[in-house]
Image 1 (spheres, one colour):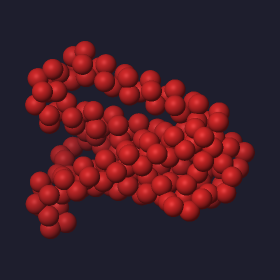
Image 2 (cartoon, rainbow, N blue to C red):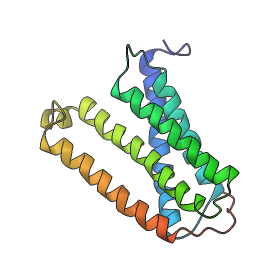
Image 3 (tube, helix red, strand yellow):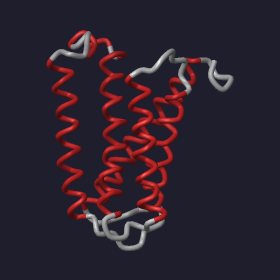
Length: 166
């Protein structure tokens, strides 16, 4: 039980929050590619990404794991993104710092999605039971390369005016 919810229900809530974070993160990223900033999508992306990380810490884990390391790193990255966006208002270098940290936060969610997919989805697990096989490595490498390319393009192109309401 977590927060009075059976572990399966809590896991489902965590997964739904994560998927919303990924979807909204992609919307925000594509907006950056066209110098558009939508305050509603941005808040939803940052909020669900923070909630994904926070709820990830609530699972019954014993000892330090790579998942905890990713979670801690994600929280640091998200804190910098929030600082760049809401305190520094994307002024000067804070614009590209925000883009980079937002894309890193999105990549962490996608990275974990791929890991969990290869652990929990039978046909993927059959292709890469130890997650060291080519299908897993190809999926992770493709996700990383795509997000790096989109992130670099976004850092170059993102010149937002005032945020638009959702």
